Length: 357
Ligand SMILES: Cc1cc2nc3c(=O)[nH]c(=O)nc-3n(C[C@H](O)[C@H](O)[C@H](O)COP(=O)(O)O)c2cc1C
Image (cartoon, rainbow, N blue to C red; front, top):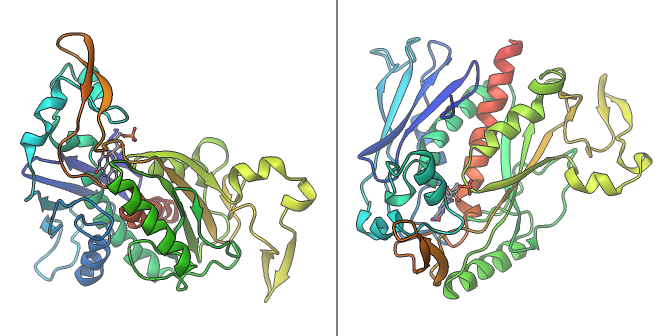
């Protein structure tokens, strides 16, 4: 089921960018949970469009829960269905893309796969808009994980090649990030990143970047070997976010250039617990959590819709055709993707916790 994430905490996302509504059906929530709507709304607001460095599209993103709660506002065991209205769609901006697909977007592949019946408006089901219901599901997962002592936080690791300061991956600074659309350890790095995003926007272009996510408080022993490991399940969730091009754990690709003596994290005992001195492994060994923080990075490509004229093709005339994209777009996806990364990691981690408990 391509629109469904998870086995026990199951999240099915539906809708298109310009359909009347988008939403999610969430199954597997224990009965008796009262969703903390203040927390969930604040979490979703971090992803909502219209903020600094993002598209000018404005959406309230007020989730409406239409099933799954009892008369006391607690989950009742039935699937929780949430709806979010699309209120600020400008579909005429997309008419031309039916014939001339955007380079880097899913217009062409969707037209082929769905024989031209795909909803082109706003990117249809491929739009970043579909990450709003994911954020609802992720915020609810965070609420449940908090009760188990698990916390999840993401920072902007880099934008346009401008990196944040390094951190101790064994003790990630969960509460040590600067406020604003680019949560970083180094506020000066956040300023330079914002300048790069603005410069790209002014130049009719876009930039990409990397989001790093930490999950602390995980017990050792979650996950399975081989195809159902922690990395497999978290990566599957992360690759569901549009525009994710790569996922790495711990030191990731950098590990390939290191010696074993430098990369291995020595075990030691601290307060009666087995821990590792560093966290190059990123909290997972053999697909199973080690009890150290889970560290995962997701690389986001530059936003495909840019304001410059680009070469494309006319599908009806089967000839080359230039394209100038109308509409409102994010000059960089990273700022809005930070809570989305936290959300899908929370869903995947809760799903694995439910395997164990
Ligand atoms: C939060 C978020 C916002 C996005 N905003 C835009 C946007 O404004 N314009 C755009 O062309 N793509 C945007 N994207 C990316 C496209 O949805 C994505 O590149 C496209 O569906 C193709 O999928 P792929 O990049 O995974 O291959 C956004 C993605 C996310 C997660």
